[in-house]
Image (cartoon, rainbow over all chains, first blue to last red):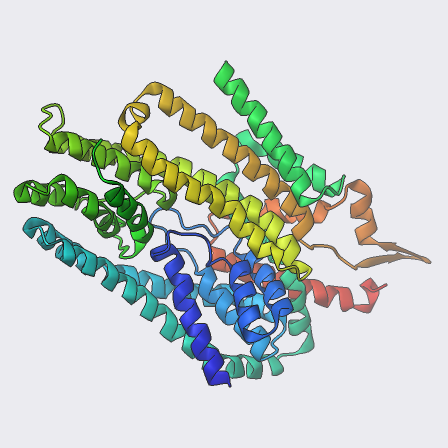
Amino acid sequence: MLLVQSLITALLAGIFRWDSRCFGQNLLDEPIVVGMVLGLVLGDLKTGLYVGAQIQLVFLGIVSIGAATPPDKMTASVIGVFWAITAGIDAATVVALSMPIGILGQFLGILCRVINTRFNLTIDKCAAEGDTKGIDRALWTGAAIFFVLTAVPVFIGCYFGADAVQAIIDALPPVITNGLQRSSSILPAMGMCILMNYLYDSHYAPYLFLGFTLSAFLGMSTLGYTFIACVIALITYNYARGA
Amino acid sequence: MSLSKEALRKTFWRGMPLQGCFNYERQQTVGWLYGLVPGLKEIYANDPEGLKEALVRHTGFYNTSPQFTSVIQGIVLAMEEQKANGSELISGDAIVAIRTALIGPLAGIGDSLFWGTLRTIGLGVGIELCLVGNMFGPILFLLIHNVPHVLCRYYGLKFGYEKGVDFFTSAEGAAQMQDITDATKIVGNVVVGSMIATMVGFSTKIVIHSGETAYPLQDMFDSIMPKLLPLALVFFCYYLINKKHVKTLTLLLALIVFSILLVAIESIPVFAA
């Protein structure tokens, strides 16, 4: 049973990897989507959604801009959700482990990109000879490398990983496990500040505090403050265009 | 403007695997060249040497927002077509120069719009729903990001092919893009601000005993303002990451250790309820 689940999950991981490689980057590899899909496939949607969301908060600020290869939110959530659903490892522990898993995934991603450098030589040759089929082949071989170097490690992590992790957790004293529990609500702060690092500067500070105020003091719902944000953005845009 | 519908259709779909062979040296180049193949084959159908020249022209470095690559595909194909038809104004170097000039600004606006704004809004809405077990969370998230995504790709190709060069090389175009980027950052920041209030669960159960009375520390914070602790924590972490250049993994470990210490302190009888 675990074998079949691990195989299916590994294949799904390869498909999620291909979201940003071959399907045009639709963010299917974000933890909440991964959580939903794995939850449906493994038969526990609620846990999938919940754990996916918690891991998402840790990786909130992880965006793949330019050549940056950040810690890999996809393998972190695939393996995390898998462990939570199949081995019953609790959400807080999985969340605390998600970044280290993501860093392992990051390393694999870097490896893929380094390997794919050899295809630059291939396309140089094919372009000079007018060999368009060679160019097509180069692209898809590179994509295949991404797939394999994602699916195989994920399979290993799913099939062999949960037991090892559970054994370690069982050996830990309560203050540590309770501390890990608590960290799952504190760790989103890290996700927030990394996202802020990308979006925030003193010019946009008023808008950040506006959002904070609307939520903290008025308890406004997500769509509520999103609408207000769009309204303000449009007013600013019209003003800038009109001036 | 004589590229067949079929060639344009293939160009659109071949814009999807832009990052299929991503590497650090030339980044999206293999995917970029892959995306140009149908268009170039048609343009240079009777000119095999011209085709080779064009292909070689596009083996240079390429990196931009995947959602906007179709704009550049359109512009480049329009220019290649004009060159192939004998226009003397358009040299191979000019095409490469335009391509190189466009990848930066389009990356800037695309990253800001998609990574910065749409993803952030989508996650703000989606995470909230997921935490209560609602499957619409991820679905709404995907719609919020991808409806504009597909529209940008489709109309981007059309716009790039039919009008592109003139717009993007004008001062008007540059100013427009700056204003759009500005607007997207506004929305992104509002959403992050509210997520600080709703998604960071930092509070404490520590109680300070003074004589007969017990003062829960959290009440003290709440009376100043709600969500004071999450706000302070996030800004402190931001300060660490931005000004002190603390690494992500270090911050993660520090926060976990902090959580453990918090639990430990709260369970010391002197500080308990």
